[in-house]
Length: 149
Image 1 (cartoon, rainbow, N blue to C red):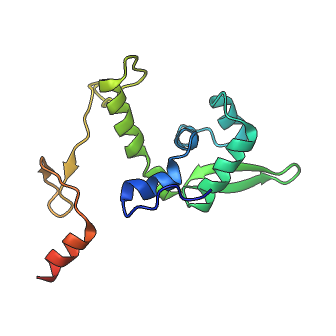
Image 2 (image 1 turned 45 degrees about the vertical axis):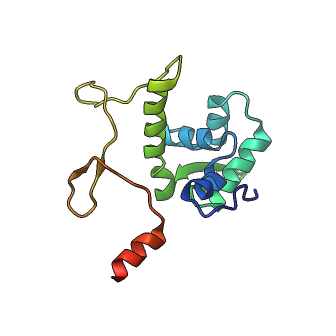
């Protein structure tokens, strides 16, 4: 697949990897425990076999998933997430929260598995571990220049 966005932006560059139609849903199915081609295909009605194969191949090239050959004749693979792929769980959780607030028909919510209470996502300072209430996205060059002073 070719890069769609040639912009110096984390969002644009991430979308070059996971922004194609079906891609996030394929990753989500692997995260949900569907590790074989036919399991993923069955869980995603409407995706063609060719497109699923293409998405799986690209996700492997980009280091989001890894494949393990578990049958040689015919060749069959098991798909699992790499560390990079596992880190997309936060993206999925954020989409669940966004959907619970903004979709007319909501299908899921994010809860504390011990209490059943709904949860929110929070940001914490990497150095202190303290909750941060005011965040800002800044270009990396700004941070590097501030560290030089």
